[in-house]
Amino acid sequence: MAEQTVLVPILGDQLTPAISSLQGQAKNSTVVLMMEVWDEATYVKHHKQKIALIFSAMRHFAAALRDDGWTVDYVKLTDQDNAGSFSGEVARAIERHNPYRLRITQASEWRVQHAIDEWEDKFPCAIEVLSDDRFICSRSEFDHWAEGRKQLTMELFYREMRKKTGLLMNADGKPEGGKWNFDSENRQALDGALFVPSRPRFEPDSITKEVLTLVESRFGDHFGQLEPFEWPVTHAQACEAADAFFQERIENFGPYQDAMIFGEDDLYHSMLSTSINIGLLDPLDLCLRAEQAYRDGKAPLNSVEGFIRQIIGWREYVRGFYWHFMPALASANELDASRPLPELFWTGDTKMRCLADCIRSTNNNAHAHHIQRLMVLGNFCLLAGIDPQAVQDWYLAVYADAFDWVEMPNVVGMILYADGGRLATKPYAASGNYINKMSNYCGGCDYKVSAKTGDDACPFNPLYWHFMDRHRDRLSSNHRIGRIYSTWDRMSEQKQREYIDSAEKFLDSLEPAREGWAR
Ligand SMILES: Cc1cc2nc3c(=O)[nH]c(=O)nc-3n(C[C@H](O)[C@H](O)[C@H](O)COP(=O)(O)OP(=O)(O)OC[C@H]3O[C@@H](n4cnc5c(N)ncnc54)[C@H](O)[C@@H]3O)c2cc1C
Ligand code: SF4
Image (cartoon, rainbow, N blue to C red):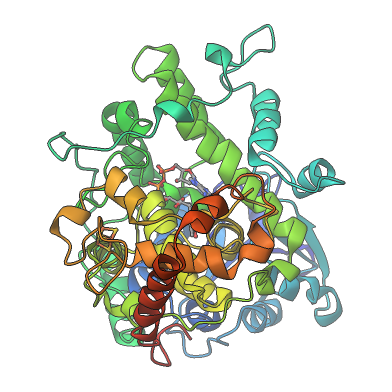
């Protein structure tokens, strides 16, 4: 049996029974290898819920594979000889099973794939790496699309994906509803009185409880609250979460996609990213369900198109973008930002009510919704000129759905403009006005959103002009932003000075994060 054995390592984000590495494999000659690896749990100090989510989902997945007749060699973090590293653990498994072949689905992260690429020289057996067909657009397809384009406009990529999948496409090749994008209908603020159905929350079973104890004992110094832990950890639970979204929340997903309400952490978002990213749910399947909801008259086109665009547009796009620009993307810093991340990102200790609420949600849930990540937290990092590496570490550590391939393009390209504008045509910079329009944060804030300068002014207001002023050389020629400088130029010198002084006073007051939070 030994010389016919095929070893199939399955990574923590490959929890899909139809994963390419298992396709066509005979159960009686395959050993599935799953490993809880110390290095992976700590290369940044992930939020406790994120580690619990991945370990618990892995253990449940291993149990499901065994029930289905597969042989699974599962290495727990606490196993005595645990090598602590990914390649070290694979080496030990090769000694145990003496496989003639090792078969693995391509890693989603560059760092892990880099380690896999070295196995050919390291290990005595043949190594077979398969592409990850859970993505709709292959890496080579994206490279082909990107070839020769200066600006990689997501909207154009998205149209290609619509044509490829046929989602919301009519027989005549035109988009459903006559438009590709209904975003103009999707920018409504919430008045706070609207009913938001709560999403299903899952009680930890005995497997999850054991993992929670492990996480508390081994990763107790990591950021974030561990309990209540309510994420779906099995395919069945993830399906239940998806069912609830399609039945109760998708209708309002579109209009209120950009809304923020103090203390409301989910609103009408799907809260499915953790399940999609670790493989419990299939992204295309979700899009087909969304389309069906529209065709059945259960959800409006603007909501359904918006949801589908997030997945076959943004999600696929950032994955292609990541692989296209790695490894240079990781160190991109076009705006030469160098300020350390402030301590308040870890403690939430700030008078800025919007920031404090987003950090509270991040701490409690290992989640914040998109517009919080983009226009509150991200906008702050952009305007304050925080070092992209520190921002990447933070986003990667604190969100349960964060993996390099999706976190990095969003941070480097979308929020920080550190890629020089390849992803976004202009920086997503905004003053307090935007946050006030889209949320109810400002009403109860110690700062005044209407005050432009001075100690009680909303810090976003002077920070906005400080950012614009210091990057004038780079940004004034951008046709989407250049006209802003005529407003600046019309201000008196004294007014401009007041903006700059207020911003600098605020920036000087920021306490840098203490060592040891992220790494
Ligand atoms: C700075 C920043 C960092 C981010 N980091 C991550 C991350 O590490 N992991 C992650 O999955 N998402 C990330 N996002 C995207 C987005 O914020 C989350 O996918 C979303 O908040 C997850 O919640 P949800 O499932 O309720 O999403 P919904 O609002 O319900 O959206 C539906 C789905 O669309 C996909 N999606 C939406 N926007 C994006 C996007 N910009 N990029 C990729 N996929 C998207 C997700 O799969 C999401 O589940 C980031 C966004 C920003 C601005
Ligand atoms: S006033 Fe400024 S700091 Fe306060 S909640 Fe509004 S946007 Fe945030």
